[in-house]
Image: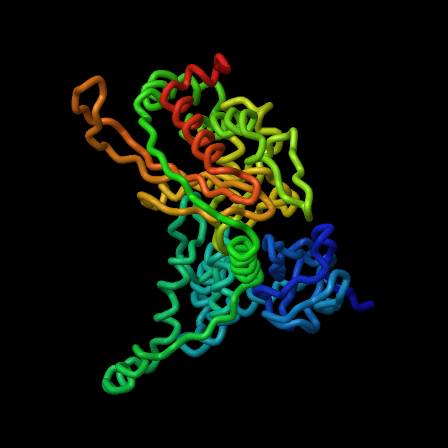
Length: 416
């Protein structure tokens, strides 16, 4: 009986998804729980496994097409999956044996060759980006040499093998110089992913529906640096995570939000909704674009809890493993463009929030302290806020409060 592969329920607000990359082709054998396709929503990418082993009989929804929750996107013919590649590889030396020599020693020589394909057939762990490229190019992962940590097959390993697969006619293409020049001027049209479309739509909504304004300040990170150097090894030994800057800024933001609740509120119709909880969104980069997973009840989290969660978010974002519920909600956002080298920027509020804090690169700069010019690690910070609910005085004082507690981190501990 044919098994239907359906789009599962992904989130409460999601009724439709777009088909991403199919990692197998029609007619390919599949094993139960094998990931065969990526489903893209406006919030995250979800990998869909097959419910039964067998053969992928037909693909009903191609890449880029939309599908409703519960809709059938493929059909699977259940059955035992045969290990087809192994016999085909072993059969290759057999014809050569009788051709070269029909004597008895030849089968003995053929035996090691029959065993040789075993290590070749072992498929290494494959990174998601490499798996998508393998599906597009049709290259077998068993034929590639992995170069990633732990023997993982990287996207770069597949890219390096692509020219080898298309090398049969290099000479005619090299001779046709005008064709090469024309190829360099070609355009590539790629449809926007659902996540990229959602990001673009939300950014436009933020600019059209809110009165956004940005205020700036700069922070001396000397004391935070000293604390990190002093306790870095003991912190990592005890909690198993590195003591970074973000935990200090999360703590400082929560402290400032308690003093200026307008930045933790939202406009709902003609009402202002003040929240008494502090769910801080942390903007992280993923392969699909920027995502903002949320630290729930950040006011109740310790420094180690915050650092561990942010590290986990960053790792899972690169593997498209962020869960949808982790992206929902959020009362305020922190975006750290400094990790990419940004010196100054104006972040955009994530609706319906009223504020976002932008962090930037740390640079040693000359500053004046007690009448003396000294070199300090300085960072520009930016606060973009919705002027409909937050006045300039509150925004400037909010950012000044963050500056104060970061420059004197002991105030975070003493709550003064």
